Image (cartoon, rainbow, N blue to C red):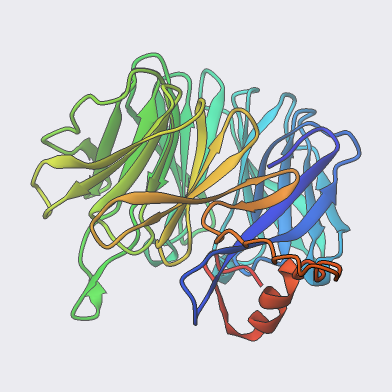
Length: 359
């Protein structure tokens, strides 16, 4: 959640010993009245990169609940829509995209950030960027309002090779890589990519012999407005989430490669869906809406998704916290003091699973 004054980082903590859900405000960032369009934590959850409306990118160290500005650079001439971290095996790398129709790759050298590469091939706003799973190498996917997605691949001779493919009439809004899957210790599937666009559709693409083609059969039409985000399940190549301005999130599933995709469930949200994010284990799904709230859902054993809580600028609101009955008053005596809501959380502090991998 972000605004012109501050950004809020929340996490959902699930105690190992109980079934309840507790929320914790992890940190807040003073944005100095910056207008922020995207905020992303790095692989270790220790640094935050923010995409600003003035074309700049800001990097903060947020370890130990601090906020220390460790990088600031202006790679764009228009609003920066998205920022993405590469896997740390490739060093300090960030990718950004902007309304100025450019994609920038930023590199950290001796704690300083530099513009390492700029691609200006798209002919309209570039709306989303995402690095591929590290197993496939250093590849960056970009979605643009010109209707195309492009792939920038870093070659052994230290160059960036580009391919593009037309994806959505009216513009491509978002994309997500399929996680790498293994069979007998080897990669079991080629690179696959999901895209969403202004034609209200979600499409799946695969790369074979360096050629990207749309998978068949296509996903059925299910959204009534722009698809603003898609998110592949981090632990399954057969589960995908899509979120739309029609106020819905659809969880898709595929029985096996080559079979049709079908709806597993459809969630109704209180407003336009802007962003989706699975937890590290895939047990929870965070859905950010245009109204500035993020709703967190968890899959139940019977395949439904139930709301666990809401994260906003006030912190985390637990939707499943058991109601605490007021203590009865004894005649002639004052009522006992109200129970401390933080005491239980403190007692469980050493036995919680951080569902989103943030420490």
